[in-house]
Image (cartoon, rainbow, N blue to C red; front, side, top):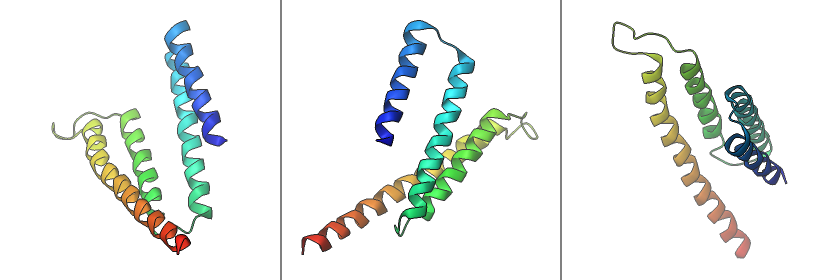
Length: 119
């Protein structure tokens, strides 16, 4: 039920921005609220789950937070070489790897669980 309401919210939001009026501030506020909702939903899941790789979700969420901070609070290049945007892109690589590692672990865990139930 949570997913259905989020999909409905996102669909209505996109249609409003596309068909009626594109409001940048409204889009930023809605995106921030969806991001907070995503962190809360994953936090609840991690809290009640006994998944062996649930720690990876926290690493991904912290990484996503850092990416957002580096995107919002941009700073000029340090010694003409490394700026906030470059750092955020460097973090994305590692966060993506950890996320897909979790997806892989989750598929193995769910397969093992289903195989045990089938026996």
